[in-house]
Length: 128
Image 1 (cartoon, rainbow, N blue to C red):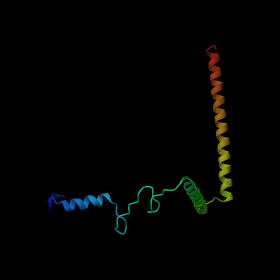
Image 2: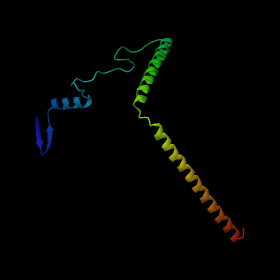
Image 3: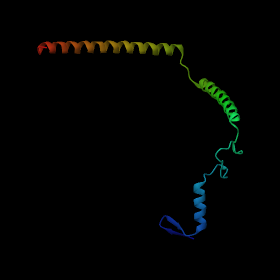
Image 4: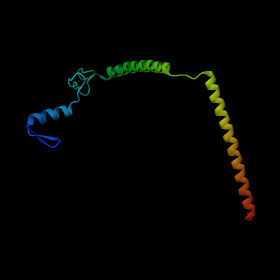
């Protein structure tokens, strides 16, 4: 039984509360069925993995090589999507960078010389 107070609906029945609480805890998937629960220690919904030490290392190394191969495939696919600059663009940006480096080197050298000159003359004026 639900009562309305202004814009808020208050429910007194337990059926509605149980339904609301249950749907709040289980996320919905696109087809409307709740997701299957996977226990810790299982792989792909199968039984728990209980193997001796050697089998674990063999499975781990096989998994490593499979993951490495997948990583290399993904890296190759991603590198194909990169937009590489042309030789002319690389040349132009390199020239701009070198000009900026030379400009700032000369600027900082001149500022350093001016401050050294001022400090040296200030020292001689103060009798140092």
